[in-house]
Length: 363
Image (cartoon, rainbow, N blue to C red):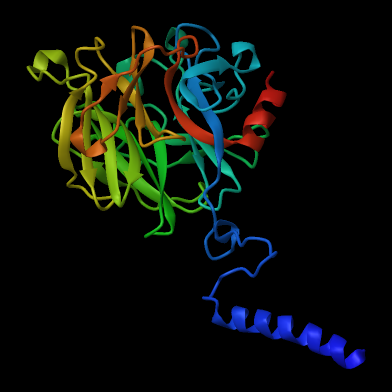
C-alpha cells in the first residue's frame, strides 16, 4: 500500500517538475497568480489621473481678483470645469505688493510635493503703479508656496530672482530638467542699461531663466529668449525629447507685425537653448482679438494637447487643441465650459486621491 501510494504521487510530481524546467523564464505555473510587471519596481506604472486642477486669477477689476482661485475639471473632461471654494480665492498674498497674478503649479519629479509660483503685482486701482511704472520699478521677486496635497500650503515667501537691471519680473513658470537635475524657472523682465540705474530709458521685455532645486536659492539669471522685440508669458511642454515653447509676441500692433499680441510656437532639444526653431506664429488669430498667458497640457486620456490662451480685455481663457505639436496647428475647442473670467494661470493633472481631497476641502 505504501509503495503504491509513493509511486502514484511521484509520477505527477516528476511531470510537473519537467514542465516547470521547460517553461520559458517568467512563465507562471498553473494555478499561480499572474505576475503584474507594470507594478514591479523595475517598471513602475504611470500615475492614473482622474482630472485636472486649474489655478488662475480673475483680473485687476475687483479688489480680490489678483489672488489665486481653483477650478476642478469634471472628471477627465478638460473642457468642463467647476469652480471650487464658491469661486472665492484659496490663496491670498500678505506680503510684497499683496497681489498675485499668473499662478503656476508644478509637481516635483518624485511626485511627493508641489510648488506654486506667481507674479508679485497688484494692479487694482493702480495699487502697484501704472503699467509703465511697474515695468521700470516693479518687483524683482517671485512668490513661492510649497504643498504636499494641493490644499495645505506653507507660508508664502518672496524670493528675488531678477538682476538689478530688471524693471519687472512677470509670469514665472518652471519645468523640471532631468539633465540638469534642477528646475528651470523662467520669466519676463525689461532689462535696462548698466548706466541707467534709474531705469529711465527705453527697453523691452525678454525672457530670462535661472535654475533651482528648492525654490529658495537660484542661479544667476541668464537671457533665454531675446528676438530683438518684446516677448512675455512663455510656457513649455516636453514630448518625446523635444521642448515646445509658446510665447506671447508683445509688440504693439502699430509695429506692422500681423502676429503682435498673439502666440508664437517654437521647439528645441535643449530646454535652455537660446535658439529654438520656429514652429508657428499668430496662434489664436482669427478666433480671438488678442491673446496672452498661454498654458499648455496633455490630455489624460488620449494623444491630444490643449492650449488655453487668455483673451485679455475680452472673454478670458479660450481653449485650443492639437494632436500633433510639431505641426503648429491649433484648432479652437467647442462645447467648453470654463470658470468665470479665468486669467493667466496653469492646468495640471491630478490623481484620484488629489481630486477627491480638493473636492472635500473646497466643496
